[in-house]
Amino acid sequence: MGRAVRNGSPLPPPGSPDPTTPHRTPADRDPAAPAPNDPAAPASHDVALPADHDPAVPAHRDPAPPAHRDPAPSADHDQAGPAHGDPAAPASHDAALPADHDPAAPPHRGPAEQQHANRAPAVPAQPALREPAVQYPYRGAAVVAQPPRPATAVHDPAGQHPHHDPAAQRTRHARHAPWPYTRLDVAAARAAGHRPHPVRQFVLKTRSRCNLACTYCYVYEMADQGWRDQPPVMTPATFARAAQRIAEHAAAHDLPRVDLVLHGGEPLLTAPARLAEPVDAIRTAVAEAAPRTRVTATVQTNGTLLTRGRLAALAAAGIRVGVSLDGGLPAHNSRRVDHAGRPGFGAAARGLRLLARHPQSYAGVLCVVDLDQDPVETYESLLAFAPPSIGLLLPLANWSDPPPGHHPDRTPYADWLLAVFERWWHDGVRRTRIRLFEEIIALLLGLPTATETLGLTPAATAVIETDGSIEQADSLKSAYEGAAATGMTLDTHSFDQFLDHPGLAARQLGRDALAAPCRACELVEVCGGGHYPHRYRAGEGFRQPSVYCADLQPLIRHIAAAVQHAVRHAAAHAPTGAPGTPAHPPAVAS
Image 1 (cartoon, one colour):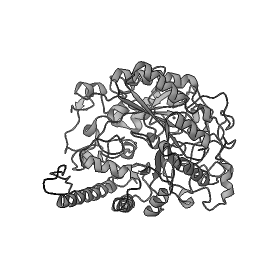
Image 2 (spheres, helix red, strand yellow):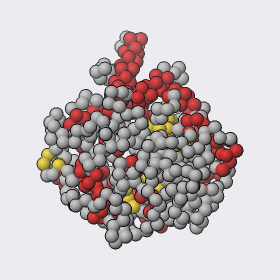
Image 3 (cartoon, one colour):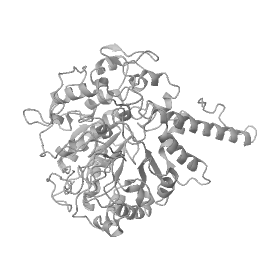
Image 4 (tube, helix red, strand yellow):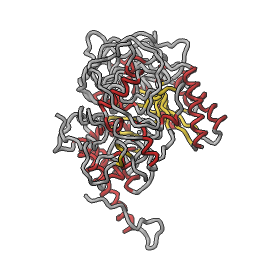
């Protein structure tokens, strides 16, 4: 592999000092608007449809949290922060999230990956801005840092939101993340041999609003509040343009498959008859431009709006369903509440029971690790919904905003996950797949995986926001305001141009993008430096080991030992000369 470049010079070789070595210890949503690692879809994570009108209330109002609730900080994938609903509240409250018709209640916030709390409070709602995004002058050139703006500035003097202001974007990226924005020269990296990898997964944010108000959601409750300036719903014109751009990219790279993820916000706020429109448009465009490319589709939802009608519409369109849930009991889901603070678990459980009757449509369940919950109880409670797979996600956190329970001398997340692994690994019957464990096993065996959370597989995901903006993986929204922004839009840029954005290019460099300790680590092929957002540290960027490094090491080593034991046991009991027995089982020092 060629060498990436920092400030025009090759990156330091493995083992050399790295200026970005991490510190081990870091000192509204619109309740009414019509509106993934792919949480339940193929690649990375854990998208919108037009509508003349949505049964979920006016789309253009700016959300104001109910007066009796604090605007809790958090993200759809995070489990930190105070719960604003009583998990033991009467079941009748769940009726506020009807299962068989579109609610006129406050709209969902997103099925986005859940994340932790204890975040800074959300900023006050701003008027929706709809200025078109402008070009981001990154293609083929190094980024030059510009003088930082005051940290308190939310809008520039001209009134333009910083997400759509190229100067503000460059300044913000350079200030918050020198790696990669001022230390990676993309053109030099290309000249050194780093070829771009085409986008294979497209996350369509079909809705930018949600009917839940989960207190840990990374879309609404963490560092980036860009959702406030997004149209509540993606229009037919936008997803038609998305279809053209995706088909163009598939044809240019002769892709065998592209994976679509309908995401949000809550994508099921769309009426059943219109749910499949973006997927139909993309399939039609791809069939014309790249007939050999297969298109798969998944919708990621909080499950509260799953009905027979929606499931029938999704099944007819070949769109599978992934559901975000914190566990299979009401007590596990105290942070997943609606805009009035009422629990959403009852409606989600009803939706999951319906989904379980349609196994051909069931993609799986995403669950964020919550140290406050018993791991084995959480795992076994999820089995009650018969998921074909479970995605166990580490809370979105970083060195500047560490996860709950983080301590340099402890490994609470490894302990939690290994309790589940032991239960799953030694179960007499494999009742579900657990993606995290299977990915680690595959990487230990030298097999390819499609994940961005582990290993060195190049990132291959693009996010399309409701206004047609092209963004990076939205898990980056946990890092800083505008961290996922590129300044590119479907109207002004192709996905080939997106490949040269330094934020994406850095995530396709493999070892060369990692900190020195990671490049020298024997686990690097499996860990891959950890999930990219987990490497962030304010003012330095994304070139540190994962904030979960201490947890990932014992997790990988324990699983490696279990695989080695299983291989040796199988070899000892296999008939002499039996084919298929590995000569050298994976070896990782314990």
